[in-house]
Length: 113
Length: 115
Image (cartoon, rainbow over all chains, first blue to last red; front, side, top):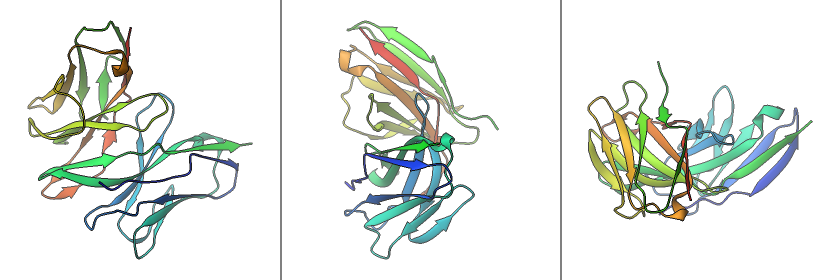
């Protein structure tokens, strides 16, 4: 099973760019890399997903090198409301037709004023 | 378009009891997954239902069971509750078409406390 390793916590200041790197050395050929954000007592919320190179949406960018053994979530100009836990996930085919996401312990991002 | 909803929000049970948690998937989604999230940990996959059949299970014992209904609502049942079952239970729905797995949309969760 593919597993992910992320920093346990990070601090940043408002207006800065935050980069969170995730290691997934055993990623499988069919796996996508997905990032979720979670606030306390809420369900995770999808941020971005990618397979290779770079993906950008309205809230974040995802950088994936050619070997796909790591990925970096980039949050531009963070605000206090970005304080949350960020999970890097890779999927796993449990059996034919089932694809489960494996969550790690996540990175606790604290944005300071 | 309504999102994923779960009920109840909070629940307190005693050891040995049984509990049923409910989830209503996002409109149009055909797959629902259930996760257990202990305090300070990431969500752990319990099982997934696709078109009313369980088609994948994580490392959880048989006393964790579920149902998915034709309207894509679902239930998580836990028998013989143990203290370690205290956690936030999350339901997530997605649309699976062929081999394409789209993003999962999570509900707000049910906080279960076992005393």
